Length: 290
Image (cartoon, rainbow, N blue to C red):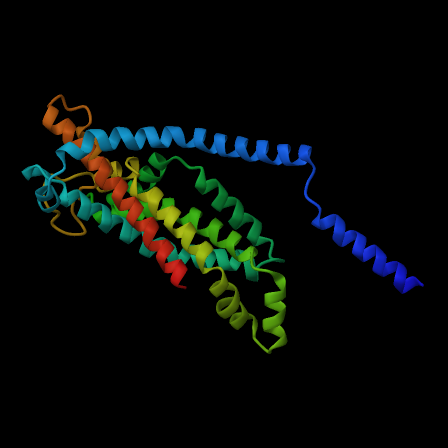
């Protein structure tokens, strides 16, 4: 009798689940979906307007030869190369330290009181103004080496990128379900093997997203490079000499009254946007293949 009653209850529950929503529920669902799409479109309007302004003003002045000549020859190839160089230096310095710190915070220090201090300091670093980072890099690198250089600029960008990578890596690792850790331990995996072969491997897409966000932020920074790499209108003489960058080029030439120079600023903005988009797409492709 009890089994028969349970069967009837299951059938009634299944029937109720298969019934369509009431008209009021459907209207509420459609209205909320429409509001969500509308607000998303409203949030995109400032971004699209900025993109339209940059494209409309910059595309008319874009020429292929600009990509191969320095600023002294009415191009911006030296600024492109300098931006890529300093962002690469910053990535080489910050990515290993940031990922390892994020792994330490998420996997090896749940009971360590030192973790709270590291996380607190990292959170503070995310809110430090970039110009303060530039002054710090000036005092640490420029005064020590007695000259502006790409190394100093890369160091400043590394300080900006580091907290973003640490926090995103920690959050990406925390999203991995606990049963995966238990399954690895049940199969005889050590804590080191579980962390790096299972947890980190599963969190690669999230970690890569954090790295791409950090690179995108560093690529557009101007203030730190004013105090560290300075600028150069010609090709850089090496890692320990003043180096041009796209953000500083835009900063230096924006208020120039010459229409040709002002046109170069908008064209440079297109190149900077393209560079950031390239880094973002590259990280997505790497994460997808992984």
